[in-house]
Length: 210
Image (cartoon, rainbow, N blue to C red; front, side):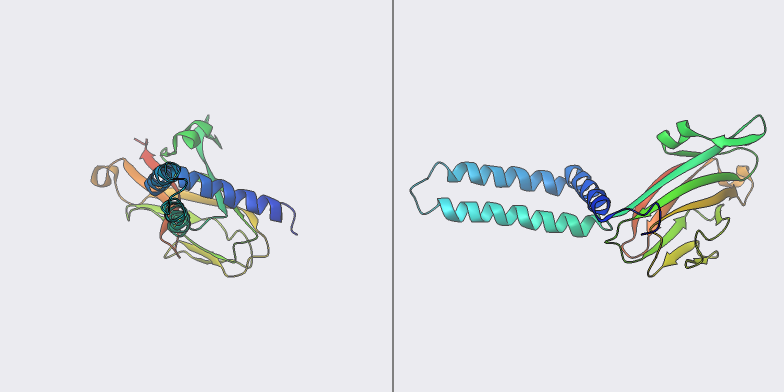
């Protein structure tokens, strides 16, 4: 195991935490839990009738189907990504934890550096990530995180079919390509999983330059 790579136990924890979070945020999870609970409650009213068993089977089936649907809808699980933007302080770039907590990347008169970390569970075979913004804001990786990775700068896609290192840093810069009067001050940054189209991470870009 490469130093920093998650163990099998850590991998299971990453997936479990993400799945539970997605389940709790899902209306399907809420709905199925309520319906299953009601059916189980109603089945208890008829302990000696032929309705109890069918009602409980239906309740269990509804809950299991909801679990499967939420798993499919929430993929990929097992990919943990963090971004830390930087900002200018006395002419030097320093980590901007306030912007990180707010989900914001600030552009201040020059390209903004963003540092990130990607951690893949051992259950994740490979990855294909796309750094996405609108056309008037550009994102560029400063270098491939690992030699085994492939990076297409024209599409901003980073991928690897069978990564040997499951924990690696990313470093990229964000800069505008048009004048602020024509593009406005607001944009977005998304890291998307290309296999599912799901946004793994999303930040708002605010151009504070003058």
